[in-house]
Image 1 (spheres, rainbow, N blue to C red):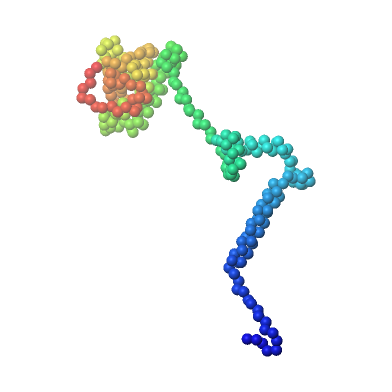
Image 2 (tube, rainbow, N blue to C red):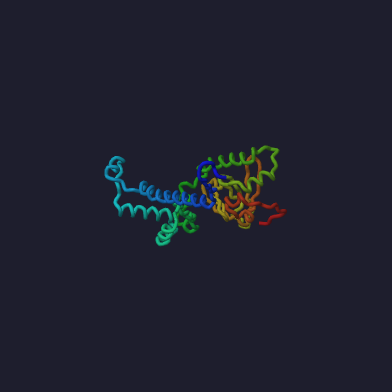
Length: 262
């Protein structure tokens, strides 16, 4: 249609194209990324810039020299990455970032050396168990005997007349006999029979007894039978089956036997 009174004017309106919208969004994204890329170096330069003399004076910081700073950084990296060689460390730092963690030094566990005890020869040379002649007196060890009797009473919960003898014997087998009065009742050597005294020392194979005559007797356990008496209870010790140290005897289980020979 033509309007009246004049020339016809034709106006064309074009619809927005999707291709043009994509171009505009791509251009905007590129400009934004370029701004971010440019802001990275600027931010890095702001954070890591060298302090001026005025800033260092205001912050009370002494700026280190270049060589000193480089030596500190290298020492810190070496301490933070102890398992890496210098070349591997340089390669890793050039290719990717390294997360530094707190490094704890592991203390080496030192093997505890067990102290070796003295041998039998060394004990004899040092005379550790030697009793001087002036100390070989029966009266000196009577208080030890009284202590031993109290120890046995506490161990057996009181020695009452109705106490079972088997229980007392089982306790005496594992008890410490130092201070007990023991007697030799049977032996293949007749000279040992009848010896009575306070037990001073017990080893694996012998008893050392101090008699009322102030004589120190060394009696072997083998082929001897001993008696221990306390508060009317008498126990027999067969030395051939008793050849143990007192420390070993406390942990040993003794089996009941019908007959025991000398």
